[in-house]
Amino acid sequence: MTSALTVTDADGRPIQTVGRRKEAIVRVRLLPGTGQFRLNGRTIEDYFPNKVHQQLIREPFVILEKNEQYDVVGILHGGGVSGQAGALRLAIARALIEVEPDDRPALKKAGFLTRDPRVTERKKYGLKKARKAPQYSKR
Image (cartoon, rainbow, N blue to C red; front, top):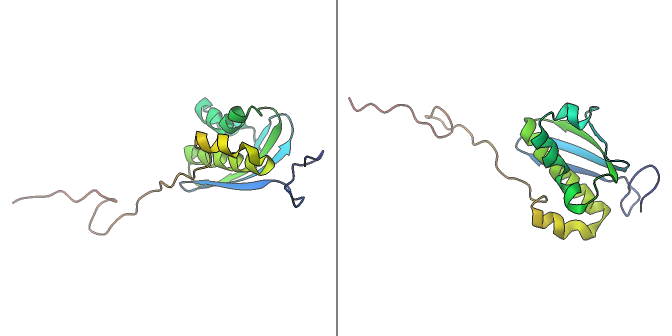
């Protein structure tokens, strides 16, 4: 299943998955390696300077105790920093399942396979924002 160059699925294609959160979309390719991250050509420390985001992204590997087995190459666009971090975590979890389907229950129990459905509510006519109404004046 694992070759020297890339991790492949049953059809021999490289493992590629997509993760989404809010407006962020992330495409991930999983490669056998030493735990390196290349996110839009940059390291994880460079792309996500916040340690909380770095920890969030690495959680699927920590849960499965596969910290230094795979390199992650990601293309991230749209949304903000937190949205991209959440989308990257989802994409990594999906990729790990394609490599080893037996890991699914652990990742599902941890909540890493659930796509967070919360998105910005649209602005309605007659209102200033999605729910904020104009100031009411009695007289």
